[in-house]
Image 1 (tube, helix red, strand yellow):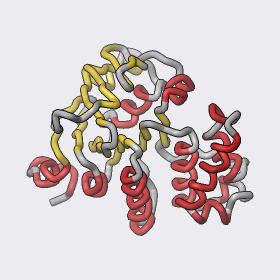
Image 2 (image 1 turned 90 degrees about the vertical axis):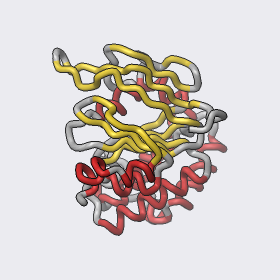
Image 3 (image 1 turned 180 degrees about the vertical axis):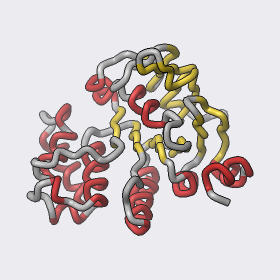
Image 4 (image 1 turned 90 degrees about the horizontal axis):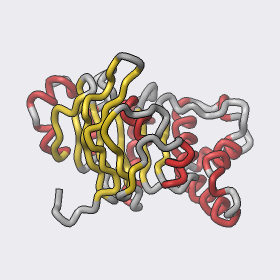
Length: 242
């Protein structure tokens, strides 16, 4: 990383337990402002647990999480969202009975008093995902998987994130839709959104990321630039299939 890089997120020796079972073991990583950083690993590696701990859904049992230099470890999830950390959860988790537009407005709930900004951001989301404008009054539960993923990303963007956490955005999607979703992620990063991307599809994730971390059984076992990881023999054999 360049010496002038400014850290937005610093994770320092973070540990997390599920009761007596330890899921994360002193994980340390850094995401600089404007970066797209990928975390790759197999199922059960602890990727989702890491994001849940960063967003306050699960409490850490050790270490610290610094966001813009301020500790957010142990804070309530809504406080972390207000600080500027918004998550797109694994499996989309939209609100099925509510309309597409209502789902998007829920993402902007902490900012609801700034009606002018909410409406301008809603227009930006519709520009980014035109299909959501077409389906604005449709129940979210009737959308296709790819459309729901677009909605989940749009809902998170409505929270005005300084850091966007993406959890397995390619899960369950056809290859063409995966390409579209990753194109949008790359576009958002190009517009200045800092992104931490958790993904089992290592090839796709590292193909658009600046840097990457490899997580195995709750531990960071490797970190490097994306090109270096894609060329690493152990990474290729374990995650790229060649």
